[in-house]
Amino acid sequence: MPRKRKLLAQLSALQSDSSFPSFDALGNLNTKPDGDSSPKSSKYFAAEKKNSSRLEADFFNQPCISLAKSFLGQILVRKLPDGRELRGRIVETEAYLGGEDEASHSKGGKQTQRNAAMFMKPGTLYVYQIYGIHFCVNVSSQGEGAAVLLRSLEPLQDLDAMREMRSASRKGPTKLLKDWQLCNGPSKLCQAFGIDKTFDQRDLTQDAAIWMVPGPDLPGEQDVVATTRIGIGNRGEWTQKPLRFYLRGNRFVSVVDKKTEREMAPRGQLSC
Image (cartoon, rainbow, N blue to C red; front, side):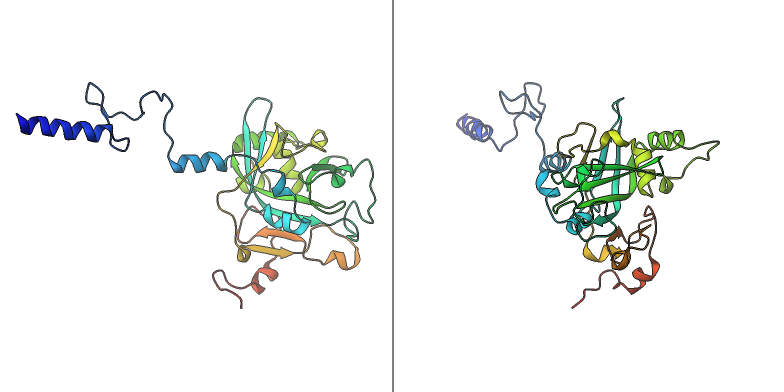
């Protein structure tokens, strides 16, 4: 009997320890402490939840070229009126520096009603129309009149909805678009995500219909190709400046610069 009482005392002491698992009257393992009705979350799920939060103002508040590179790998989220969420990984951008940048809508510091968003706080959307039909979306950065064009996305979530919106914007009979064709260009991106002029001057840190979240796998320096911007006519030295950035080897990029890629160091080879 004394031995039995001793064992019971030891068991009672262990169960009073919060690190020791407890059991209910039926012998089932208790997963919640007394008085706590909320489920426990592991560190993994806590990190996942944190990663799902939108990018804040301090992320966008950086120089234009730096922001253009930092966008690569981040996730653009678009919430449709019916509640569906579209998601795409940013794989290609272009930097427009304003001021002396002859290819920028704000060259010379010229501010108009059309380009007003380029002079607003970093993280503001600048949406403009080309050919009177298509839209392009940019994000303002540090620098007077500076902004980054979102050029291509890798579709991640609700691709069927993207196809619907791409098809609705095309005339005549259309073939089923392949995944890589959905967002491989600035106007295609806007069509697939339902972005139009009503999104101009929206704040990515506050808006309920469009925002960005951190990407799970951000690229290294050797994964980023820096080359000339697309569709820049005779703008002197600015035509050839390497202000377009894209993820090397990504099939969702709009235009690949094979020559520049050949001149880059092989992946994994560090430069001195």
